Image (cartoon, rainbow, N blue to C red; front, side, top):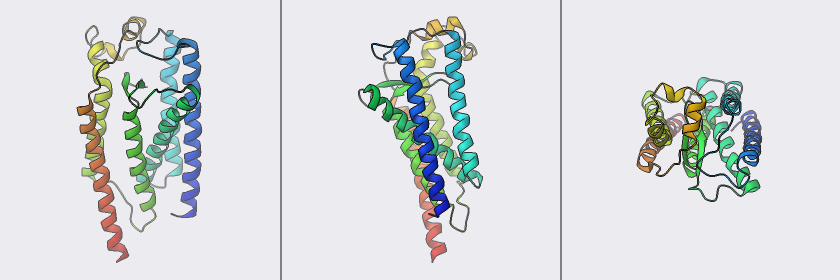
Length: 241
């Protein structure tokens, strides 16, 4: 790996770790305010302004991570790689800092609210960590191979595997919550933040994570990464030969 790329990767790693600390700090403040006895489901009521601020904070986080990829990458594929790499490092260290400061989560199977856009995602902590590790592997494949004579683009089949796998994983995160909300609200109402929806949603308690759905999507992602890595390895050997 070239010196400039190593330096870029170092600073993106450092930036992402710092973002993980910042994210965990915000969550620690919120838990001190709303869950001084420790976080658990069902949720406690937050004012509308706090809920909106949380949504905007998540959107701002995504924009910052995308911005890192756009600024650091030299082509579309490398920009994507730096984005998913920074996202993954941020996510993993978010949990590391929460564990170090709050001794939470109790285990990798502890339930957590993973995301709030466009609706609530919930799942055991191990599920986003597994996805983050896969993202790091794919990103490193891309970043390392960008310095060969060819542009290591992800082909259409690999994109299809990655996208479909990701959608299936998102379904596993949102399925139980969506089923709960749709018992009393329409599909369009589920995405409109109002006090009635908030009062109803805070009573939600996750019970059973759809592991089969999650691993179906995860295996598609892994297969897409393995296919991409194998194709690049063959191409590298051909060029070297």
